[in-house]
Image 1: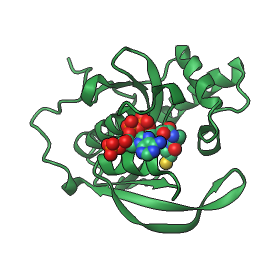
Image 2 (image 1 turned 90 degrees about the vertical axis):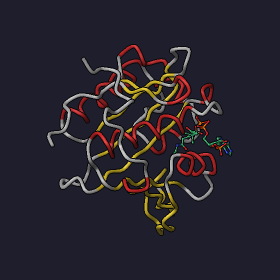
Image 3 (image 1 turned 60 degrees about the horizontal axis):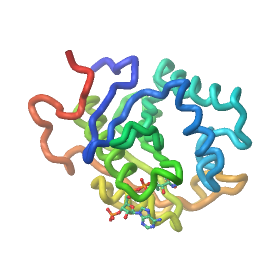
Image 4 (image 1 turned 30 degrees about the horizontal axis):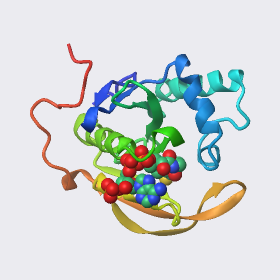
Length: 196
Ligand SMILES: CC(C)(COP(=O)(O)OP(=O)(O)OC[C@H]1O[C@@H](n2cnc3c(N)ncnc32)[C@H](O)[C@@H]1OP(=O)(O)O)[C@@H](O)C(=O)NCCC(=O)NCCS
């Protein structure tokens, strides 16, 4: 199957929606740049400048254009952009892909990350046919582990010194989900907003 050349719009549960990044999302990048952790695990700039904020958005477009993956803005039920969830395609055979996510502080605790992760997971498995998805979480990060578990991911094990974060090789807990763990795809995928 050919991969889509753009990030689709998806419906998640509880009124959360997902869509491509826009230049007007720079205030979200600014908020994320003030977080103690998000810039350490992403390319969110720290310190923030308008030029760096725009470059961040353009990098997200570039990722899809070059086949690197699909970064989605998470939008809350009131229409406010609150975070990012990305599906990253490093395996050329597409037997597996990885996911990452963050929600800016003011949007947390409302189920946004879990709803967004579940929607992108469903799209990756049923829409793109990727059988196995993985994500990596630091052992102290209870909120992220709960987010993964809520979306059906299972803990696989501890990877010793797996990720370089803030100049330090850190242990990561690997979570994974196999497509067979999910309910069968409905005849028409429910999540996609931009069908004709
Ligand atoms: C992890 C993160 C994305 C969670 O975002 P969120 O939108 O607040 O999460 P949700 O509201 O969808 O909650 C998902 C689950 O995590 C739990 N949770 C959320 N924040 C929590 C916290 N601070 N402590 C413990 N559990 C927490 C929720 O209760 C929920 O679990 P439940 O369904 O069992 O109740 C957010 O805290 C964040 O962006 N952190 C910084 C970046 C980061 O760590 N990204 C992940 C890297 S692997």
